[in-house]
Length: 314
Image (cartoon, rainbow, N blue to C red; front, side, top):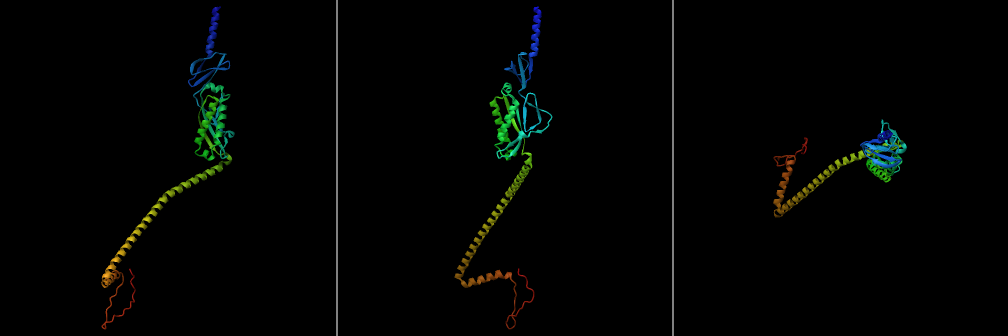
């Protein structure tokens, strides 16, 4: 009888050991509950144990990255509330992505929050529905950030600062909740005006781009023409200064020449007049047409009437 009882006890113990043993993968943590209350957290191991009927456990990956999508869906939810990738099928969620900017313009913002479980106990017990909590916090904080930015910044180079500020705020709120979650990143996917005004914004953007292009071309033209104009102006100024200097020197030379002639004239008036007369003839005669006239027998100069064509003066 004792042997039978011993065998039964061994069988029950063996069955309990077999049923109570479970595996925790290298990327997982396991939380053990005793009578529904948290008891302990187990790390990776091939032969982790819990007491059947008294204890239960939950396992989750603490290294895998999970994504939450806002304003659109390409994923489906698991039973635990996280999301996993499926065949890509894009679907808009208008109520999630419609936001308002600081300049009171409507804007559609689609973004993704990437996170992982950092502490499984906090993740399971501090939040009733972790995925929904992350979604609510992220949506609220993104709306708050967008409300501080103009639509022009959101459509151009302001996306990076918006992502950084939203990441900071989401982390702060979830850490305050003790959510056991590490928010790894916030990424804006698609930011554009709503459909009814999208064409108008496209026209404005096109006009702004055309204006920027024209301004760039004008600056390029100015950068080319202004130096040329300055160079030409500098050349004209230099030529004028050179001409001025030349005229001054020439005037001084002529004045000095006149003074020297006047001194000679005072010393010998007749000789000076004769010399000036001859010098003037030497300067004029080579440039004019000359005629040599003979006298007749009576000593009178023969009359001369030019009837032929005159030569053009040089």
